[in-house]
Image (cartoon, rainbow, N blue to C red; front, side, top):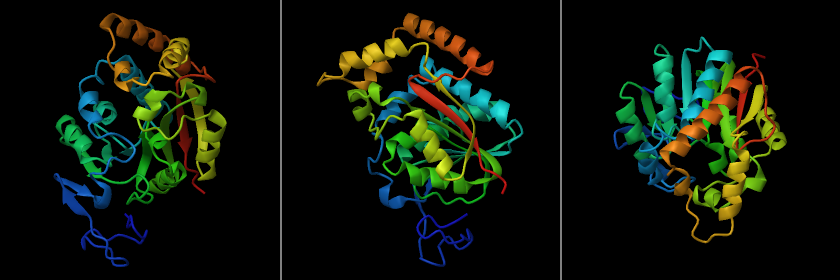
Length: 289
């Protein structure tokens, strides 16, 4: 491990950095590596976790994204033994990874302890810690690192990518999902505290610039993109637009959308790589030399 403040080698027994004196705290029962900002609303409204916990398990988008993540892990890193999820939120993704890969060491980090409290209820056996994605205390520690719909919340996304690169072992992998296409920008993105929606070229350039080599990249929410675009255009100029309405969906519509995205997922698993879509999944690797 390394000191998140000065990047000096960390000696956990001392619980304080020998170079700069930084010492993590325990807040709400979790080791806090960024205690100065643990309760600040930076990048995501902390109260949104309570809304997410009630819908993630049934909502078509969260369920489909999870299935794509599990497919990518099985396909590209089937024998991984350790994984870090940065920005684990309520633990919805990490809990499914824990079920599919029960022997792996799993670590979840989140800037808000309010999210970690939900995650701890889902996964009492998983190591959870509070940390700033721009100041992770890890170096060459995990076989897979991941950030699912996280880096778009951070102004310094290049710094987060550098931290992910440093945290993963040489030869290890990185999984990232992000919202895509600037032309889909709407008040929903503002409410969600997004700094940006990505274009594939600039996203790939940022990932490769820190040292990763991209193995595969694909859009998803492609087959439903016309509906998503219409919805965003409809709400683009509404002063009262609420992102929460995208979480509130009729069960019949939800089932239909999940079936459509299931078909889309099948094409990806068969080798299709879609250029446009509401979101993008990128799988990359840290070269061994």
